[in-house]
Amino acid sequence: DGGITQSPKYLFRKEGQNVTLSCEQNLNHDAMYWYRQDPGQGLRLIYYSQIVNDFQKGDIAEGYSVSREKKESFPLTVTSAQKNPTAFYLCASKEAGTYEQYFGPGTRLTVT
Amino acid sequence: AQRVTQPEKLLSVFKGAPVELKCNYSYSGSPELFWYVQYSRQRLQLLLRHISRESIKGFTADLNKGETSFHLKKPFAQEEDSAMYYCALSSGGTSYGKLTFGQGTILTVHP
Image (cartoon, rainbow over all chains, first blue to last red; front, side, top):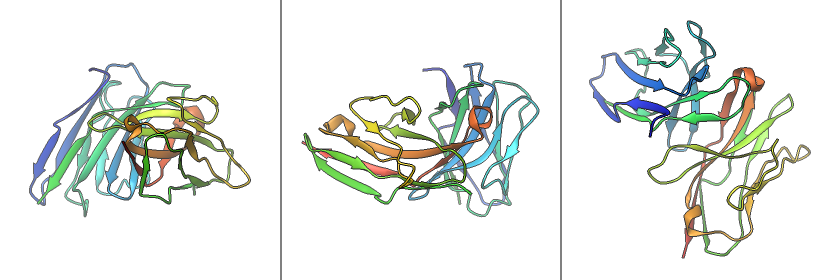
């Protein structure tokens, strides 16, 4: 089951620590996205990237950072500035000129 | 700013009954709307998009610009339809493809 992979599936961190979530795709898609999923709130866009070395803030970018050094990789760092980091994080990618986003399996982050 | 509202957090029906999952949106431009589905232990995936006017797995959805709605319907629900359903609106066209999701509706189809 290739396509988009996210690792690890579960991640535990202490409050005050930065943590990086991995997202890799082998679909040769140009665009990649990070969403946060919370119960009763749906998915909210954190960051997105259309091309390598370029990315834009989504609706809830505060406390997060990203990089896009390679087309196939779009890691998300949850910093200590994020006030409520415990959530389920989903990565997605999309081919240029199309609408459909393909989602990874997600990473559940728990910060205590 | 765009907004997508799914008023029902939970929806339960019996097998063979009709089902309608509601979705309302607000958007100043011309909307591109989608339904995504997440079955148990599977990834979130696209179910259908309004521009293609397809029927996927028996589901249809019609865009009603007057009522700003994009409700998902199926005349005869099946147990395998049980899943989380998200309505989503795309802004930025195919270039940016930013999706705004509703809160989601958990559909349970009882035997």
